[in-house]
Amino acid sequence: MVKSQSKRKIVLGISGSSGAVYAKRLMDKCAHREDVEIHVVMSVNAKTNWDLELKTFDEKEWPSFKFYDNRDFSAPFASGSARFDTMILCPASMGIIGRLASGTSDSLMTRAADVMMKERRKLIIVPRETPYNLIHLQNMQTLTMAGAIICPASPSFYSKPKDIEALIDTVVDRILDLANLEIQSFRWGN
Image (tube, rainbow, N blue to C red; front, side, top):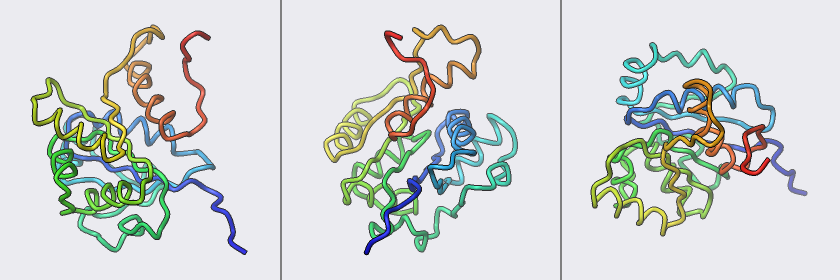
């Protein structure tokens, strides 16, 4: 008899794009959830941007999360047999998007995203770049055709966000919705 998985297993990849605030808010919103197991991998540039944009990164702020070095190919989510059901790349640099679109798995983060696509599992990519050039658009098209979901870090305003955190939440709540996690959020028409 096979025991069903009690918690959703989610990989959060944080790449070197500006927008660490989106990843931090996502982590804060998932920190006390009982229904998910969060595994985090960050690039070196992600840590640099985090330190520049927020404060010094300290994984102790999220004691329930598991953190992995971006060179650690022995991490469980480097294989489809580990059965992680969702990966979120937030923020996603155009560099990582380009590597994914070309099929290059040169780090744990790109390998994990490649695993999600090959296993036909959910990969949510949150680019934080503006404007896009044709190569960016073509790479995102390639990833969409391969099954990834492109969710640009483009805040919405119809909920009339009162502060920067509420504005950030318009993006983060959308990501959580795409990951099929139950959340309380502004809903159009309610």
